[in-house]
Structures are given as structure tokens and as C-alpha cells.
Length: 138
Length: 138
Image 1 (cartoon, rainbow over the protein chains, first blue to last red):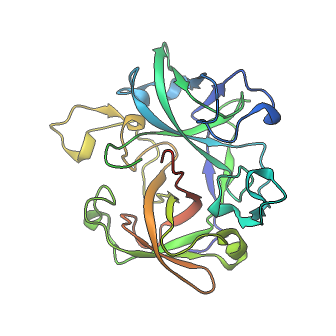
Image 2: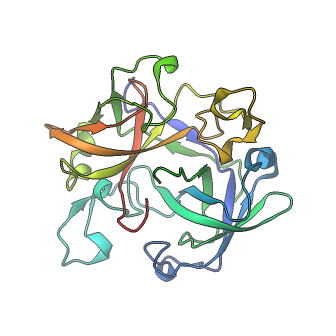
């Protein structure tokens, strides 16, 4: 087993948001991000059974506009901040550009839609996994 | 853009753990999981700059032994628990089998190794991303 083996990720749905442009998106959901809808592919409807309005969930997304070759960044895009490894930051540019977003479910709708908040991901961002927040940690 | 587009994930390193068999692994790190080493591929050494002993980090892994066709499970593998969508559980069997593990870094070693605890992932599990824990949430 070595790091040249690759795995294939398939979107389970997409973000539908008023955020259309990278430059309008806050760095973190807690920094004034809006509500958004998550449209789950109908094929996965059964997999969201047990998610309700009020649930705290973790969305994993694929940040498809990211640069996967970046290994270090100036945190918060500020050149005055010394370079730091991307794994010590939440920068979207990273080898596997997975976004991690803790959100609350505000509403559910047929056939498989979840209204969540706050979400800093752009409109059209692929969603790749959803997990419940565990009471004893994240 | 649709859900048949796929993305390619490449391991950035691997878990080295005494846990070798699924049946020995606890469901969650908080349930008695051991320490483990994360061996980062040398190519990504620069990307862990800024992670220190004492850092709280989130490891994302690829649970390579999972069944990706499973949409519902009996939580905690207990047939008495009613079926629930995998996105409402932390079950490893899910369409994109990404593991999410909040751990503490106990030690760092050259060239790019991190000793972490607690980690319920099996020996040989690919690591696909590392993120810092944010103080205001997960």
C-alpha cells in the first residue's frame, strides 16, 4: 500500500447557496455565512433517514475550485502571516480539498433536501459525506 | 454538474497502529482507542509545518475496508436498534467512507510522523487530510 493508490469520491449532492463567488465567501461558517440548501441525490434519500430539523451535522464537501498543489499558505490570505503548512490551517487549497462544516439543520424538504446554517461553501459545491455531531466531541 | 462526476483522492500518509483487525477496533476514539503513529508521505512534509506536540487536530481517513453500497444500518451494529440512514450515523459503511477523528498530537518525529491519541482507525488506513481544531467549534 502506498500513496500513489487513489480512491474515487462521488458527490452525494450539492450546495445551493446565494454565495456564488469565492471572494464573497467568509473563511468560516461562524463568520457571517448564510443559510443554504443541500440537495441530496435521490439515490441517497434513504441515507438521510434520521436527520431532522434541529440536528447538528457535519458536512464534508469537495472544494472543487481549490489548488491541490499548494502545501503552505499565509494564514487568512494575509502576507504578513508567516507561511504555515496547509494541514495546520483550514485553507481550501490542499492536496485533497475536503471542506468540513459544522451546521444546524433548519428544515427538511422532499425528496431529499436539507436547509442548513451557517454554511460558507459556494453554490454548486459537491457534498461528499454527512455525519452527526457526537455529543462528547465534534 | 451532476453526481456522476467523480474526484480522485490520494492518501497523504497512513495510520500505523496496534489495531489490525476490524473486530478489535472501538466504534469511537473516545471508547478506549489506543495511540497511533501517522506516517505522512515525505512529499507532504512542508504541509505539516505548524503542527506541534499538544496540537488538537482532525484526521480525515479513507476507511478502505468499508462497504460503499450501504445506505442504512442498525446503529452500533445492534439489530435491536431500528435502521437509520448512514448519514445520521458514524458507521464506516457509507457511499464515501471518510473517517473523522479528533485526536491530540503527543509527539512529532522526523521526517514527517505524528504520534496521536486516541485513534480507532486500523493499521494501514490511508490518511487523506489533516485540519486544526478551531477554538470556536470542532
